[in-house]
Image 1 (cartoon, rainbow, N blue to C red):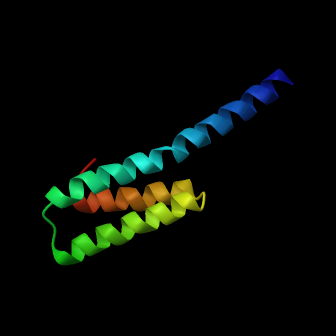
Image 2 (image 1 turned 90 degrees about the vertical axis):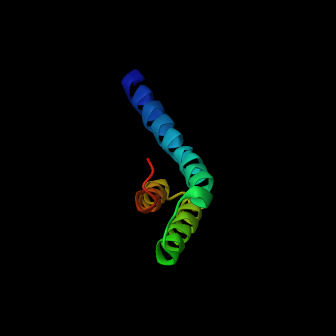
Image 3 (image 1 turned 30 degrees about the vertical axis):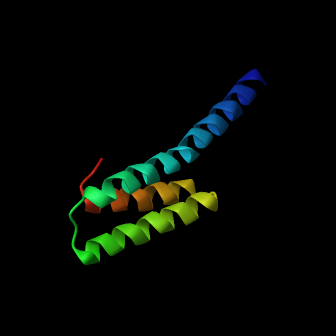
Length: 79
């Protein structure tokens, strides 16, 4: 029983930690975007992906949110 409870706590805490990663990724994009030289098309994609990531985060879709935000960061060339 103790192992079951410990496993449940571990899974819950790891998903919560992942959920809190989304705002940090959004902040990285917001901070870097004004100083990043992108074509108009790429800048539009980044803004769309960043907005999509925020919507997904608010909907509790954290895995999808992190993917959208990672795609935006890749276009920008940031980590």
